[in-house]
Length: 390
Image 1 (cartoon, rainbow, N blue to C red):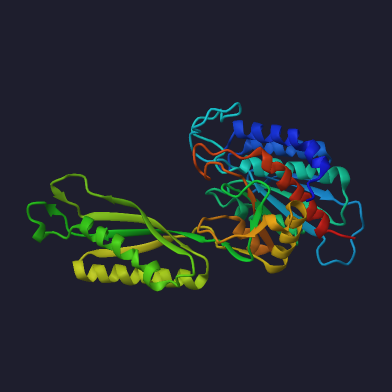
Image 2 (spheres, rainbow, N blue to C red):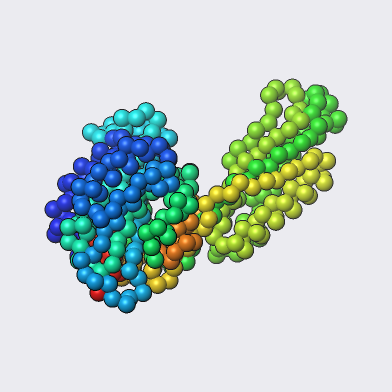
């Protein structure tokens, strides 16, 4: 294995940064303290350029290698870490517990930011590569599409990024292991809103009404057949109704109801099929019940696809760091990840780093595992040095 000795020497500093960020979490596009903290560290490290304000609160650090670039295909590589926290009350008392009520780092973005800062410090000191490493500290991954915002502010073109990579911790995966796969890693995340117009009235005369609650219940149940009956059993997909709004009295048949939920698919073909079936089912139930049913969608994050060559590179580097037996092929997730926007702009890959036996992501008892820092930081450094060769 190739855990770098200098990274081990940096470990206590990276842990200190991580715990400071954990104690001072900020929500998407409000990461003002976090951004200032990151920018200050990058300037201390001697980065060739530190840019702030991309995607509102995003930060970019540019580090140029000391070797002259050859005619290699890739001269500029981007590494991305997300910075935002979640609107969750932390449930466990730690020395570095969140000091902001109702906000905590329940997804490990504090660890992601700290590991990339550790890599930036090492790379700025050694510069043992040919080309340019662009360290991307992104806001608002959780809900605000911060990746898209940074791209809109010129991230890729301004810094000449040719490949881009990201890493996320994975609870349940042992520390010292990585997981990755070529192709789809996470799903597209469209919101679904279904509005039902029935005919209200007194509960004593249901035959004179069209009960929007009954219509919504039929629709909720019927939508569950889409994945079971229309999607290849070997292809992950999800249709979930998560909100049901209707009624205000136990003796009144409500006129209207509203369902809200999500559609998760890995391919455009599956997405189109699911939405067609949602409309077909809604139309059928409307015809049977006499209700009016309107279905609309709210765009979410795109599906995230790892590119072949970059996945192979990431796997090779991970094996150098932790050994071949500790790099696994993972299954795709129906969770959302806005790094998919960056992979639509440039080839790249997203890799998972083991967080051990921790609480799950977005859980109030979650904490990033500081033992994972050695592996994640070493991976970033090796990835730059293997990618940008003279």
